[in-house]
Image 1: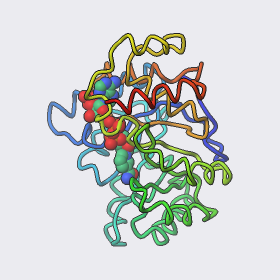
Image 2: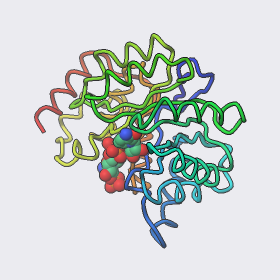
Image 3: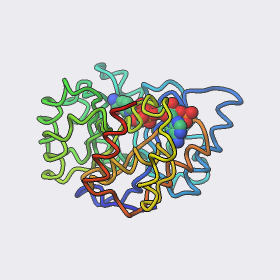
Image 4: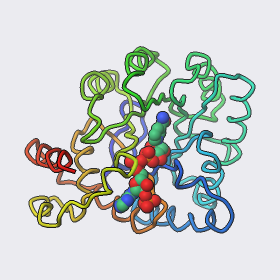
Length: 269
Ligand SMILES: NC(=O)c1ccc[n+]([C@@H]2O[C@H](COP(=O)([O-])OP(=O)(O)OC[C@H]3O[C@@H](n4cnc5c(N)ncnc54)[C@H](OP(=O)(O)O)[C@@H]3O)[C@@H](O)[C@H]2O)c1
């Protein structure tokens, strides 16, 4: 697994990580089974994990699967509320799930971001958080995220990027690179939609010399071949999907020709 400098934060991150929206919002025996997915992430070196209090049980389930190996993981989670009291509850719950420390603490969807950033900065000063970040899923919020990125306390940004969602190419990725922010890519598989129709195996033939054997790997490598992106976080409930996704995390990277070839294939889905 290749690692990249996470902007100017001082962290180094594996290029493939894992999201937990929906996939880790589970209970009972299914929650225990998610340990297999986290095992696959550790086996392959994909040890960057993203969660949020918005994702139901996900923080708790992820935290349980990290038991005994928390120190080897990079945990990114979020605070997501306009209420100060609720923010305190979310923070206490996250610290409980993740061994008293969050590596990348983000303001989810910019909810009350100036106040939340003040509070996360206090946590950082107390040694309970490391890098502070911002997320948003919608291009309508990009003007605001661009403004918030200028805050010197911000070290990371999480945004959507895949062949169908390229708005971040215009201003967000250039600004993040200029500011030295760590860049986390959400929704790399378009919430799974980009995988629903199968791309024929012979269409992947020209990508084999890049180590790509599946359409999911082609999509993940398409993102990471833009080296302004530091870590992609495909979510999965399936250990073999996790292993497959991790297979996209090594050079050689695509050049402009392969990237437009893949965007063309995606356009035909
Ligand atoms: N505002 C925000 O901050 C925000 C918003 C959106 C997302 N996020 C973060 O970004 C993460 C990723 O985004 P996402 O979960 O929306 O979507 P995604 O990662 O683009 O897609 C996830 C879907 O892809 C499927 N999948 C994954 N690997 C696969 C493979 N190799 N083969 C076949 N299917 C595969 C999964 O199903 P299986 O379980 O069957 O593998 C799942 O249904 C989230 O989990 C969350 O952590 C943050």
